[in-house]
Image: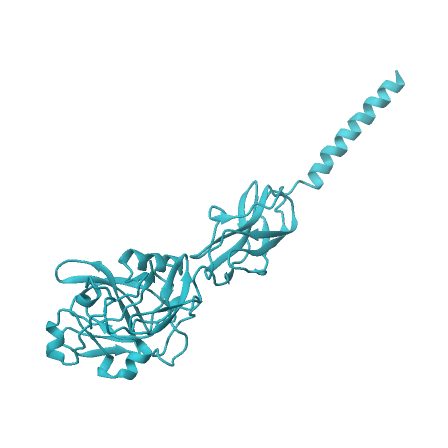
Length: 328
């Protein structure tokens, strides 16, 4: 009987100690994980290596971790991502299926019962491939370098051609009055050949739209939608202009918030208005698209010296703008 009483007393003491322990050392509430993102390295045309380190599991099991990436800004785990197991500590992630010569944002993520947390955002650009770094030659013998951006292959400078693809001459119109009524024409800014050498030539939309074609064989004047694709592949409306403009103030008027991350090297070539006047060199870059608006207007794409946006807008067809070509 005494033994049974002793055992019962010990059991009660054990339960009391367990309950007391829970009061003195309560289990911490779960929180979101904390982690960092590794710098991206081992970059090729289509792959890269990153990863992260989980500083705290947030008092709950890590059920998934990895890195996520996109071409715009602030990637989430719902974007392209890796899945690199569970648990705390460091981990390595291998990014695959990337596009050549493309700028990416990447950050590590970790998930517990509270939700998903992210490390800081890192950036990198994949190697050139798939046509980037090659050249193309127009019917006049002008040679242009090319860049690959998000699957598109672009010339990295403005068109300088003075003949259509079949060899017919594009009329050169220097006179202001004649320019306002020209059916298909080109000119050089301020009628100076030196400006054409640096910035390319200015064309009215009739020349751009001519069936004889001003683009080299295998290339074309990009459509409105192709310019939108370029915009989306380089940071979207708010940022793409800054990422595509030439850096510094050798050609652009200050301030010029530009990084030229893709080698597109947009220059402020200016324009010619309907009355034949030249303006905007140093402050404005505008290009024709191949997309017609109506009988009076057609679509163009533009950037300015004091903004980082790339925007599209309709312009009157007699205006003179440069042309960038994209590969078929």
